[in-house]
Length: 412
Image 1 (tube, rainbow, N blue to C red):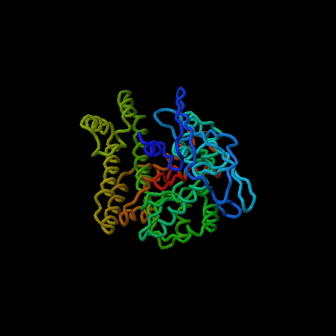
Image 2 (image 1 turned 180 degrees about the vertical axis):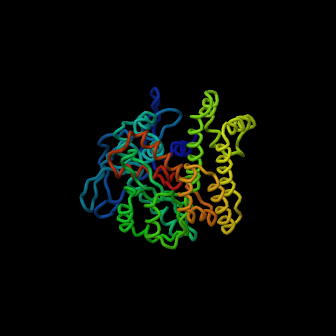
Image 3 (image 1 turned 45 degrees about the vertical axis):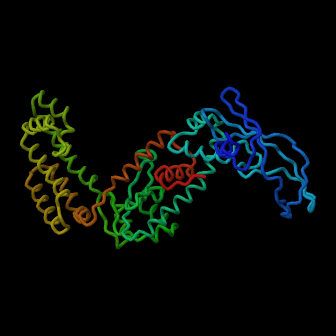
């Protein structure tokens, strides 16, 4: 193989390869720089005198053929005639006094994203301290680029749709809020806390977020989020997330199922408890066997059948309403259907549906849900389990923004 082909293979265009030696699972490449002169860092003159090779640096390069590759770089001493300065030959592909090339350090963040430092160190056979240093330095730069790119994309979006939802740091105690761009599928920012005061305090310090002009905002039925959205983005349509709303109806059905279980025979009680998931499943997604089981379950109590049909009517309303005007009429019919079911659980559910009827019907103006947001929340949950949580809040926020915006990451 020709010399230039070997240099292209090892990705070393600035060097001449002298010798190549393989020792067990390691390859050692002795090289020399092609350029004999370098500009002086003080006077920028190229009038230099070589003073010999002081020592040889062993620098790790990209692995090849299942082996670790090391470069033997000569530390050539140079002296400038004009400024009488003595320096050591500098190589552009490796930083001074470093034992890893820039190309090798560039692969460490790719390995570490959605993984752990320990696993990355084991796979690359690199000290964990080195992986930590490289990855943390990369995160500080990459997170600024990613966040700026995502927020700029949101600013330029003509029909921006935001998604707001909280996620637990410690469930039942501490929460953060995620701000999502549903139109472009990006995670815009992590906000500490979920109360109105915490949200408003953070937003007033972030001018890029205040400058957003969303057409709609999708969120659950938490009053704090709706109050905040109304004050910050008064012109935006507030949409109640479909799956959060549907859960209220499904929970009403399951509550009635549990009350029915108390008054039926032991076999029926066991049957209802064993197949409770079939009741919550959409009717058009049931198999033939599940439909037979469903019919048997609904025969145990007339109230169970009525509430199940009411639940399916709500799903059909979401799927089949052709316009916003028809959706509002259909919603009123569905509410009247629920009022005819004389059961406390259904009546309690209807109170919520009456209070949020405008936000629920707004789904038919822009059919967006927080399904993508829940997917990002699962990524955050996996991140916290994988790292056993991160004590440093800056590293924690950086990891979330990078892992939830993988397609926007630019490596070295």
